[in-house]
Image (cartoon, rainbow, N blue to C red; front, side, top):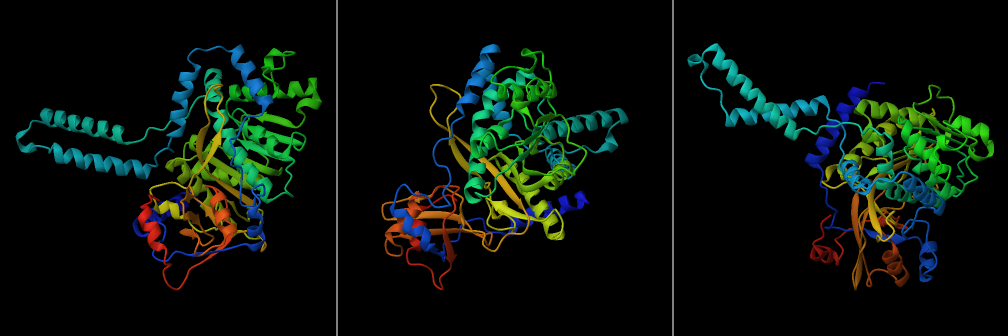
Amino acid sequence: MFFPRYLMQMQNRIYLSNKFLNSSFSSSSRPIAKFDKDIETLQLNPQVKHLGVFNHSAVKLPEQLKKAIEKILISCPDASLTQNAEILNNHLIFKKPPLTETKLNEIKVTCTEKVSETHPFPDNSFLSAEDEKKIQNSLSSKIKKIVNQNAYRWKPVVYNQTVALTYLVARIAPEYASLYQIFHEISRRDPKFQPQTLFDFGSGIGTVLWSAKSCWGDKKFKEVFCVDSSVDMNNLALALIQGGVWPNQENDCNSIEEKNKEDPSTLKGLYFRQFMPTSSALRYDLVVCAHTLLELPSAELRLQMAVSLWRKSQGYLVFVEHGSRAAFEVIMEVRDFLLSLSDENKESNLQGYVFAPCAHKRHCPRLADTTPCNFEVKYEPLKINGGLEKEKFSYIVLKKGARPDTDIQWPRVVRPVLVRSGHTICRLCTQEGKLEEIIITRAKYSKSERILARRTKWGDLLPAQLSRPDAPMSESTLGDKENIKL
């Protein structure tokens, strides 16, 4: 598999998208939404939600997990833990992937040109060899300094026990919330999917397992395979599962295998490893890679890992990262690569399609925008007296096999719905891979359709098919008056 050539194609594609595509929602001729009639009639009942509506309430950690966290933090008192958690959280949120050699060379060329303009090299015919060398060293030093200021210096986070505890305080609540929302959508749209096996790459403190158990039940999973390079993260994950008891604090069990021997009924089928298994024969119903892609040292390694995880899946493969631009681009890199493999291998185990959030397999229109495709979830933080907080995240859910003809491909709401006194504005990504804006007004839509639009939130699916009229809609000026930043 020729990864470097694919990466070059991806870079060219993003460049052309940024150069030629219009990133704003079309307003000159807005489409008309034709709502699903079966869905529409339900909206007069405020208790009924259609299949496109997902969790809107604040996500809370399970009580069992909160008690385990409390027990662990009491046993490991650290006055600076909260402050360090905030620092780590900011570092992870703003993290970017390592620079490629091509990008680094571009930065070096730009910086060299900048230094040459501000500090032109004097005529060396009047300089001694020693003076020329001094000036050259001085210019090289200036160039190196500017390069270091402009080039992102990536380095992996080393998770010892202290950093693992800091990560627990900083990230377990928001990551649990985003994962729960993704899993909730899968379970709601595909109720027949009842995963019994789970593979978690970059498992960290076990947040994926807790979220999956909340959606599909404690007793569903017969095998859970967790891979994380940090022994301390694996031990903390196990401590959370054991109710706040560290592996070496009960019966001197220092490993999950020893704990299984002591009490097979408690942790049977749960495995922690530091490395990926060499065999690709075993496949899992649900494979997840959460908040891990940006920790990998190169794009080539990210794509290789994505292929390995795709081969291990026999149901769904989920990638999720924080909702930054850098994380979104990494998600899209993996998405497009796996879809290209699917198109080339329609008869093999590599065939699949995008289940969420996209309703299409075309290139994401947000790649031509300055803003990422991300979504938002409300959650209850660990702080007892703290109010609700929000987490932005980007994700992709791929499903094995061919997309069924009966699959719902409703447009996705990709920005907050704007509810006004006389109309509602929905910004959507359609199955054609386009960003569209529709305005729901009294003149054009029924009462139940207006209620449905008002109840739809950012991240939901709008149960409608869009069609563009021959002429611009009369209310198009409404959207212009809103002067919305898209």
